[in-house]
Length: 336
Image 1: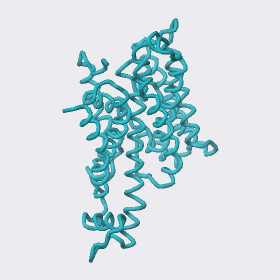
Image 2 (image 1 turned 30 degrees about the vertical axis):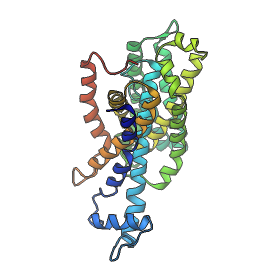
Image 3 (image 1 turned 135 degrees about the vertical axis):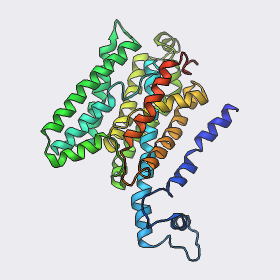
């Protein structure tokens, strides 16, 4: 299939996925017909005998399902774009925000804010997420070179340190606040609301937009520092920009949805297998495909059982076997 056709198919994927997700939910009050009536009413259409404008249907659709769908999509897109940005930055196809410690650092910052009550959640998550990634980078840097293996090992160490700090916060936190932190660290979107979307969309949007504007420079960074200098770019400055925008998007996503692992690793590889390694197409497709992917996983998490299962469990169950698959492959679609 032509690359342009693939691009537009994946770019348009969110439309049917978002529409389908509106019909998914455990509520017995709102059936498929009620959902269709509400969508028609939302679009300004009138269906005789439709119940889509009743108070209960409007409440469930507009205040429960719709904000959760939009937040799930935005979080999935943010984590996916962050993954492809960090992999290009560190020239390692097995790098993700989770492996580099960004999510554990953000988790510690957000948990500290939730436990103390006097720190704002989003800035705390952003600061400690950036600190975690920066620590992984500088620990792996030796003689101006960052080894891929050393980077992953540094990330594991940093992740362990921040996980230990998170455990200390949980141990010292009030039991009533502890329950909130534990549910949050498992990755959950059951508390999605317009308020949470309002305070995080601009941070995730800024990070995604920044990485989108830097997408062609990611191709150059993936070739090495010498190639980056040969085209007139400062590699350290470009790396700093990618790191800041990646940390901004991922930390904002983690602060509102908790720790959702593997998305930043799995989705970029899926996209590269379909589209190739060109980040000019990979970054926007990662956003649409990653958002659609997490939204479908969220649909499963809230309908697979009579109770809601944390979404982080499903992403790990999917990402774990896929990670093993990547390790067994000699080529992972990284070559330009």
